[in-house]
Structure formats: structure tokens, C-alpha cells
Image (cartoon, rainbow, N blue to C red; front, side, top):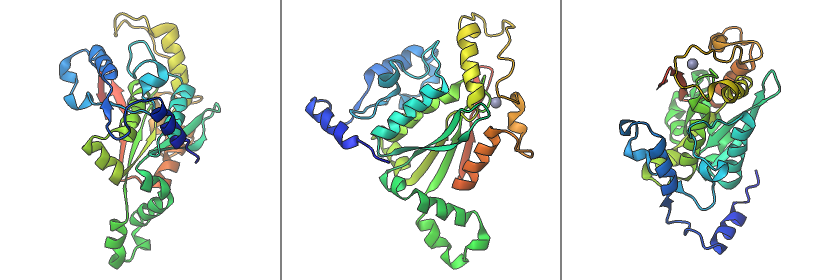
Length: 279
Ligand SMILES: [Zn+2]
């Protein structure tokens, strides 16, 4: 994919912005994170290091607000619009189509890894496919394959549409993984391929966002008895995560397509229960 990064870098240099290799921290973003976090106990210091990249836009620069801003949610097209911008500006990000939902919305996969990973995605997929099938591997070759493999870590967001944190959060996480010069994040970027399905049920997500703006945004009490959106997906509601045998829904077909294409070593499916975020 063509990435006009060098043109953007040149523009940034001519504009006299931050030197490329002395990454600064975005204190405006940090201040908003502090402001919107309801208790300091929920805010580890490691979160307050969002980079101020001169080329790749943060969610704040792209949307005008940080992810998690109270009262703000984004439709699927806006979320993929942001990821498209990440892919255009960062050599560490690509976006790939998976399939279309029942109502014609795309499901896309975001792939994050260093430039070596991006250049050799097919090679790394092949290595993990070998490791996933012992019939194809000679035990004598195992260490050679392991030495030339990268772990794939899969994050799945938005399976249950009223659990609304993950499609928003994953935009900020992707930005951090793509841009941070923090040693820990660089180690992840250099050694791991992170794949993100940010809105695995796009039909449900868009209905839920519409419902939120129309009915839920002004709720004062969480448990005031008002209903959530009556139906999210075209055909299924909360039980879309029990479609593993029938595989009748686009969400399930998308998950399995990703699984068999990438053979992720770790999969994290992001859900919520009430105010608690769990996995
Ligand atoms: Zn759930």
C-alpha cells in the first residue's frame, strides 16, 4: 500500500514541528485523560504517556476529542476513517478487508507491527500456520521455524454492541502501539504482530450508537430501567457469541476467517458487565 509518509514528514519538518526522533508527550491528551477518569485509582501512570507524533494523528487530532470523551461515540465509518488515516500515515499499520456484514457494512482488520512485519506478513502467517499443524512440521525444523516467527496477538472488539468501550478504546490503543517510543511498546512492535477487529458486529454497533444519541445520552441514573436497543444485528441479539457451531452470522464468519488466516497465539475478546470492563 502506498504511504505518503515521507511527504508528510517533509511537511512536518518544513512546518518546524517536533524533531522526528525526540518524541514528546501529548500533555493536552494527558490532561483530558485525567479530567475524564473518575477516580485516580483507575489511572496507572503508564497510561499518561501518549506520544505527540508529528505525522500520525492521535484520536484527539483526528476527531477533536480524545477517545472516551463523555457523550461521544463514533459510527463504524468514523472508526474505520480513523484507522485508514493511521494506515496512511504510519509505516507500522495496515488495514485489510475481512468481509461484509448482513447489512452491507465492512468488517476490517487492523494490523500493527514494525516495518519488517508489514513487509513480510504473508511469511509470518505461513510460519504460524505451520506451527498450528504438526502434520506439516518436521520436528527437526521446529527451532528454525520458531526462530523466524512472530507471535500474533488478536484483539476483538464490539461483539456485544451495548458493551461500548472497546471499539472506542481500540483506536487509542492502536495509536499508542503504532507511535510510542516507550521501550515496552517498541519491544511489542518489533516482536509481535497485533491484529485488531475493532467493530466485529458493525450492524449492531451503528444501531447502538444511534440509540445512544437518541435515547441514552441524557440518562442520569445507570439503572433507571430504560431499555437498550431492542435488536442490534440483522438477525441476532446478545447470543451472537453462541453461533460457533452454526456459523450463520457474518460476525462469526469474520472471526473464523481471521483465526484461520492468522492463527493468533493469543486472542482477547473484549466484553463488559455493567460498569466493569472484563475479558
Ligand atoms: Zn459481552
